[in-house]
Image (cartoon, rainbow, N blue to C red; front, side, top):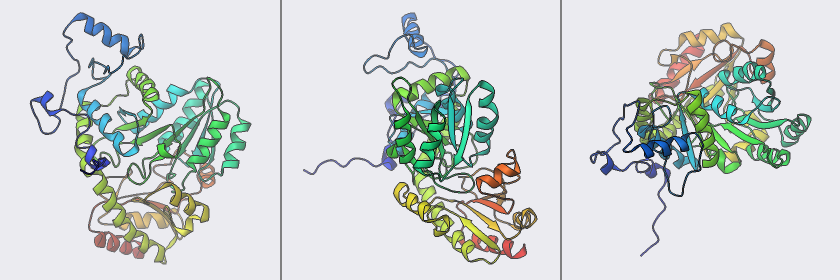
Length: 414
């Protein structure tokens, strides 16, 4: 008899974390819409809270008892078990938003006097947290170019001996530049000291978990806006953090006190969406390839930003080949001209929706300069590599021929 095949993530996400017989044999997980949970005996409650507040260590084979939905809930636990399948993480933590995941993880690690190095450009909410909020708590935040080399990153870390976190967003939003994850890992290891490790965090929202798996490349924690591809239908807001169980348990403790846990309905909706995640992302990528071909050959387009393209530069192409298995469904491009010309394109599309966010089943189009990255100064935006002529597309599941026709007509009209 041949050796049993190891199930793929696409199979595991239908099985992990749920025992039907514990829920009346329901084929799919039911919705546990409750705020609190009943203990059988007082000692059970005592032991549950001892574990929740870190008053004792978890015993071998012990699972945390259900206490209160701000702490845990069957729907969030089922989802947390399942989403680890693609990234190969030991554990995951669900949050009420991507920013909840990012801020709670950073607050677990950073203290006054510490330094956080972050790739630039970066998602607008993260940029605000790093440039404006964390410094108010005595935490230094220092940007570096998303495509920085190992030598450049090492020099920056050496110049800032208080570095505790290297934060990456790859691909960068909205320039689509990739970060060198193994290089960040090596720099972090060289700067780590006993009792004072340097941690590598990465926002993997644009390509993960199907086309990029940074934990295997050396990242300590991978972060997601689960609003995007995990939810996939533009009908929820959530976040995820994944990594080693010991670290995620500490992040969960921060989540409990900060109140950044998601709700049962959202967890249930994401669990429902996991079965089609890989299929959606692969088809969205195929649709994007059609639009990229149009953009690269249209006279009104100055430049296209998309992982793996020769226009991104030889080093970026090499990083893409080494770190990714696909290019995803988010693409940016510059039109000839500036903001006025970009606005003409945005106002001329018919099938594409003028809205921020990404990863949903519908195609969204937006203007990073004046929308998602509006809080940055003009100088910061230009230094990060994008200007008022840039448009960002998140490609959905419409007929690709219709999307090509729609964008071509909008570009011609501009």
